[in-house]
Each structure stands twice: as C-alpha cells, then as structure tokens.
Amino acid sequence: MLAQAAERAEVARYWSANLAILGVLLVTWFTVSVALGILWVQPLNRLRMGGFPLGFWFAHQGSIYAFIVLILVYARYMDRIEARLRKR
Image (cartoon, rainbow, N blue to C red):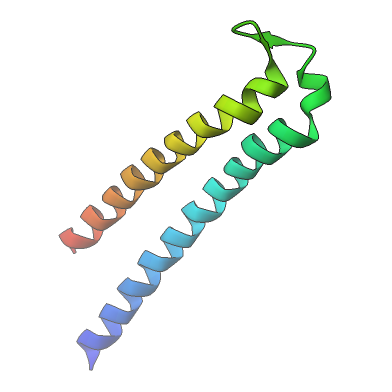
C-alpha cells in the first residue's frame, strides 16, 4: 500500500511538471503565431527582416521556426524530468 501511494505521488509530480511546461509552451506558441502573426501584424510590418515585412515573416516563417524550437524544448525538458524520476 505504501508503495502504491508513493507511485501515485510520483505520477502526480510527473503530470504536474508536464502540464506546467505545456502551459508555458502554449502561451509562447500563441504569442508567436497568433499575436505576432495576426494581431500585431500592422505595427510589425513597419520593420523588415530578410527583405520582408516582419509581420509577414512571423506569419509565414517565424511561427514554424518557433513551433520547431518549442518541440525541442519540450522534448529536452521531458527527458530531464524522466531522468530525474528514474533516479528515485
């Protein structure tokens, strides 16, 4: 019984950490893709990146790059969490 309670607590810590990082990454994704690519496109279009307006760049390229980086951050973070739980 004590082992089951410890295992449940460990699973709860795992999911708590997982949901916390997911929340941060989803807010980041929203900010980059929706806010920068759609909501603030007009002010950003005054700036240029690679010859293109910055708002256009975020809507077409920046959101893809940000999504790839977010996947890599999530994978690395979860590897660390799982390694820490394996040591216990």
